[in-house]
Length: 171
Image 1 (cartoon, rainbow, N blue to C red):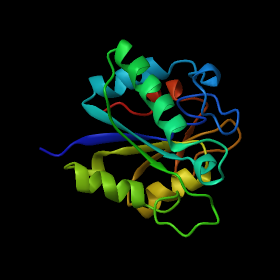
Image 2: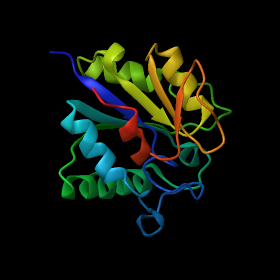
Image 3: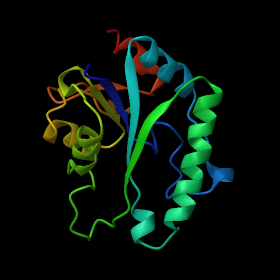
Image 4: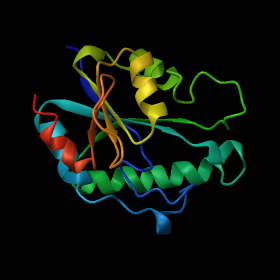
């Protein structure tokens, strides 16, 4: 059976984006994240996180710093009954030529290699246009931009927070 996925960006969607967040002490979940993710799970979705982490490529922090924070984050989700299926990340700086940095679709392609996913019934939620372009490039038809500045367009719906997407994802 094919999985329905909600692909989530990390910084600015799951946690507050203070710029190059890699320390547990500075990782702050956005309000309503756990409620929203439980809503998705109750609708039969599984959750995959796809995140650009150019701080690794820029030597602002190490891969181990990122992996340590990721384990902390996943454990916090588990405390709320939420299993994160997988976390994919791009460690490259924007200047590096890679296929994984959003808006490229390398992380989505990797998820398709790892799992039997129905992209037509999946969603991508991000806070940057590059997230939305990634979803569009991967042919994920359901895309939501977390923004209080942008308006709905033919390419995406908008919500002020991940919690508000509960009103948009109902099946």
